[in-house]
Image 1 (tube, rainbow over the protein chains, first blue to last red):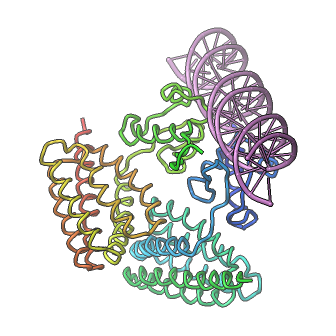
Image 2: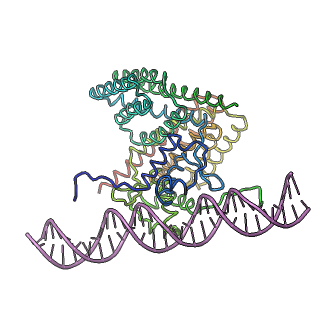
Image 3: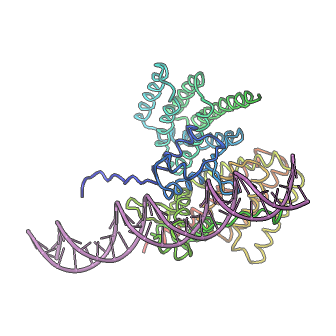
Length: 226
Length: 226
DNA sequence: AATTGTATAATTGTATACAATTATTAAAAT
DNA sequence: ATTTTAATAATTGTATACAATTATACAATT
């Protein structure tokens, strides 16, 4: 045996899956864009076999859609889908916050407090473009606390979509300070072990980010009227 | 052109995906069973390429899991996972029932009433082994009414898992008459256009089937103590 | 000019061959 | 007897070749 750290082998199909998904999330591959296997394979430096296996997974997650003629295109971004994704997230993350409030230890409260401080600091110090990822740290910690493994798995899928929408509409700025306030409120509820309060606070937090996203999308679509 | 009905071509990978998923749902491939690509390919009469693409999708849906050594096995059935799946379903289907109540036309009410009648009749006439599928018709109709496409897509994934659990514990009998009552109650709420009532009724309905499922699982696991 | 038909090219779907990894077996060493 | 080692077999991962399908270009027809 070589080591106690059994590092899982890095497979080409998995790398391809993550790389491709990231390009979609970052809008490097744009909504509705038609993509071809050969060029994707060249772009990612793999043969078609692992690429196609990655594509199957991304089709299953609806980042890619197969047209009736067999051609592949990047999934659209529609207001209705954004609305539903965020609605579902509000329900699932709400319940996670409730469970987190139930399970919270004093140590958890300390860690969460520190985390929020870091987020605020990194925002104020200017390098805030990745605030969404920072915010996800907070949510991830609550997920751990909740111990709801299946909730979290499904939520991660949804959040990848949500992240794509946020990137798409370049969500940032004042929404960030609002999110900070909302995080603080959630934390307060959890510190009080107020389960229903935490659930409600989280639901409101997600629905508030939904409103911001929808406003931006409407703005973008209004600008498209040339 | 040959016809106005543009029937999408039947691909081997898609057939394989559905066939394999069905075998898992029906416990023809049992929980925790290790499966090999070569034998699956032989069983399904395809080569490894379309089989592997089907496997990618089923891994993504967590019907199959890849072990650290690369071997494939059928996902376990755990009480905790069943609990979470049904909990999530109660939230999503609850909201669907709420939206259905909002959108309901008189024609919808008639159709739903007829549907419930059919379910009850087919149950009383003995051929009730497929009652779960019949019940899904009712739920599917509500999904259509709700017009929440993303909710429905996610729900279908979850319901395949739920169906597997129901098959696994051979859920039937008295739960069936109870489900009938609950369906009637949901329908009543929708007919009254009572949105919150419909949501609550659906949530209770799903959580009640969860209780039945969990009881059965506990029973099975108790019997395993030899 | 618009439409149809046909040949060609481009693209996706499947099978197979081979490479890389993991499991199994049995012999050798302690 | 137990452990180690090496050789073999079994299995998964990847690349490539070819088949089936779809798109494109262009001539022929109306």
